[in-house]
Amino acid sequence: MSMLEVVNLGKTFTNYHLGITRQAVHHIHFQVEKGQFIGIVGKSGSGKSTILKSIYRTYLPDQGNIFFDSERFGRIDVTQATERQMIYLRKHEIGYVSQFLNVMPRTTSRQLVEKELLEMGESAAVAKLEAEKALTHFELDRELWDTFPNTFSGGERLRLNIAMATVKKPRLLLLDEPTASLDNQSKIKVRQVIEKLKDSGTTLVGIFHDIEFMENLCDQVFDMHSKQLAVIAGGSADES
Amino acid sequence: MHEQPLLSVQHLNKQFGSGCSKCTQLENRGLTKNYCPNCGTIYACQDISLELYSGEILGVVGESGSGKSSLMKCLYFDSDVTSGEAYIDDKELKGKNLFALSAQRKRYIRNHKYGMVYQNPVHGLKMNFSSIGNIAEKLIAAGNRNVGEMEAIGKSLLEKVHIPIYRMKEEPQHFSGGMQQRVQIAKALSNNPPVLFLDEVTTGLDLSVQADVLDLIKNIQRELGISMLVVSHDLAVIRMLADRTIVMLNGKIIEQGLTDQILEDPAHAYTQQLVYSLL
Image (cartoon, rainbow over all chains, first blue to last red):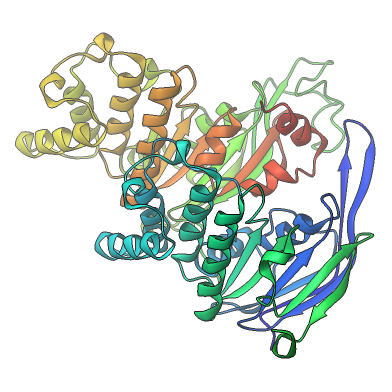
């Protein structure tokens, strides 16, 4: 059974204020097997984020289904799941990484990562240990551990974001333009981070507009085109 | 996942005025906002149903006059409901409609199961009692009689909310707004309540104190596993605190969902207006 199955997904946004309706995506189909890394590329505004946010239920799709293979609930349609089920899944099974960091003010990097574990019900001792491991693993400078992330660079924020999302060891990790607005050096670091995650067996779905940095890393690449997906590369073995 | 809500509210109605033949039907009341132009009755809460689960923070947003505070007052028994039911998952009170209990039983619930933090500390504190005395008052109401024990609890709570112990004998009227609010939170926590109501607790506080209070609330929730109903018109506060959010307008719930979903993909025209107004 696949880890994630998106069936005929469609999402339309309505702005009541302006009286405008806009279809962001329609007829989206794809499957992700356990341990795979799927890349989605496309111009900005092509609907890439809409797909990712629908999987995380930040957006509620108005068409189709998104089946996720949950450890706790079995095969569950996230478009139909209750809010409480979604909160559980987000806490334990599905991680989301964006280029933005929206966190509690005046909280240090270390506390932010620890908090993710404390919310899962881990003890303070375990949280401390695992947080340090994650921060080391994603190569956030030690001197940044006990500072507030307000002054972090884009790359540092991103690595903190990834540490926060992965410290829970999610079954599925969604990456929302993790390389956007980064310099090449940082992009290479992000790539290394993703390699590590893939090696550890995490299933990943990422959207990129500069997919060349993910070359040979994705098991399959989809192109968003006229609100739909097209396969542009697949079958990792022979291409990598 | 069959989860039992800790607090379940069903079809809560609160009106000011007796209503007339034109406005007694829930559907099609012909109100102007929440006001009946014919008889002057105000429908502050209309058919409100919600569930609060163990350990969660549920946000309630809406503009001034949308019925948020009326809802809180009804839930905390500060004012009587016109109709409706509420149930708490508690072995003594299981299956009993809380709104139909005697005044004495309601007081028991307030003293043992609930904590309340009002927007205005004047409502939650006795301004001319000492801070520790305010906490002791709540502890005594909850059946505590041992002075030494109460002082120990009071001290540890004041410490938790970062009020220096050497100021515990001072009256809250001499404190700043932020400190008063923190004493109020300490008082509300003193009976170790499973449910905490927070009504616009950060409104009127400067940003730095606001961050302190938010941080405090979040820590308390995590450490003590208290369920909270947080009313605020500040979407940033709701985004920081709440997993789930309810949007109220003219006394009705018009939308509810995951907080980020409400903020990023609002389905109701009014919620959109509210979210798009966010700076």
